[in-house]
Image (cartoon, rainbow, N blue to C red; front, side, top):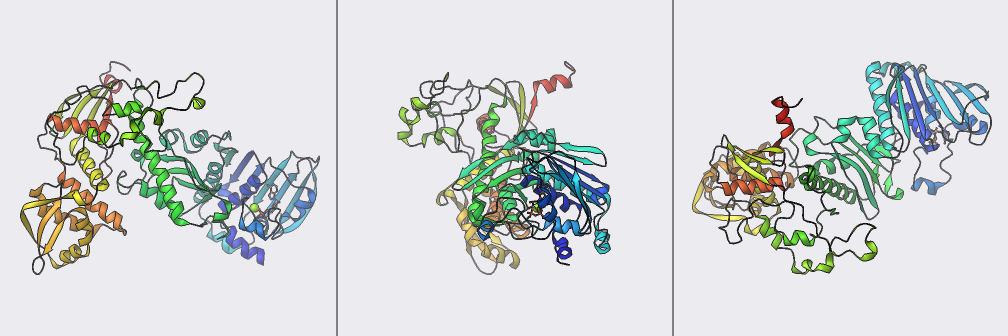
Length: 604
Ligand code: ADP
Ligand code: MG
């Protein structure tokens, strides 16, 4: 009876059988695991491994409830390192199916075959087989018709099985997994220990190629794996895979940390993908929350959240940094890790580190005046003076590698990737040529992003500009309420709004970048945004407001733009500083010479 009840918890459907059997194989130290199913797993599931196997004695008790070879005392439960530990899976599965286990222990000559029917031994006898274990489960739920009725179509059970097998395979790039469905190969991973090759074989080429590496370490936490580029957002979360200490888990906490890191780069309704392996000490995470062990509890949620969020941010920033060096003739970026590293001496000398201008601006040229843009020259100048001393960057001689010279003695300046602004199309898109590429830049989107970044990063006190003539606002009582409820937030962003009778307000100042002619419609739009924004936390509401401010402050398509302004936008885009507008739309599109040549059939 207890087995049947436990079966209800552990064995929900064929996919859960696969998960439990494969975890046993992994615990047994298998290097190769083959999973075969027929009819969505309902009639046949086989898992074969080359792990340590079981002696006849162990095999004889393996299917008895609470028989586990993995936990020896209470202390073991505090720090669980194996996948299994409850000794429930074989007991539960065998009680609701016909099961056959064939196993030969390492170092023994003979194998054993055990057959069970609804948990009762039918036969146990010597059997010739290679080292390792094969478990075959047929006719799942044959003796529990109520559960059988709840199985979905073969097709949906089959895809749940694939997902379970995929999670297992992704969790261990060092183990080769093969999945066979109704006689056909579904996937085969090489098991060479490389994340890249596991992703390639399991998720497919294009998906794997577009992922960005992510890795970080801090305190007792470490993370590795890949996250998707913001350009590759998906319509759902089906490609978010989290592994904690080797276990596939579902976690709202990790999902939120991941998605927050993409805030303002992904279009709404698009989700990032990831394959992330988080490791923390076994004591600081509790996996014994539910029998399937798919939910976990972290000791310190905030630490884990911040760690994952920052690691993903770092990966995305690395992409921004490296995008400049995608073109073949530019040398690779100097490795600067972790992200906000000190500048190298060559970067300090050059006001614009990552690229060079065709015509560098004159030092005393008129200051350029697009609102919201701080030029790289000013930014470079804020590095503290002591950072410019040679020694702080020279690598100690012990750290130089054979054949390489220390960075300080040979500051390498990337040759300038020159560009040439050709003009503007429709007063909306800046066209430029650079190396072998043609770039189109959406000037409004680019400028909006620059302003948005600045608003987000800057000190609160200098964001305001006083209006020459204060604007008056008459609002509906609903809008008045919204305005008052968010008064503090608006104030911190640079709005100074005073009440002036019922539902009447005076606007005295607005964020410095906003065009003052736009004040009233902008505030109305902000209120509308706050009303419709279903983001619960103040940070998202504040982002929503900043979107509107940035949008209102940015130059518009259709406006004439000066060459100097175009230059600044172009430089911000080429430096990799901005890639997406705050709504997640790309700011630039690239067409290669090769693509053009192909269009004109110069090459095939
Ligand atoms: P648990 O994994 O929680 O220990 P299970 O019911 O899944 O419980 O398995 C019971 C025991 O059977 C395991 O502790 C292990 O000793 C043995 N066992 C099960 N599957 C295998 C396998 N593939 N290879 C070697 N031993 C196995
Ligand atoms: Mg187990």
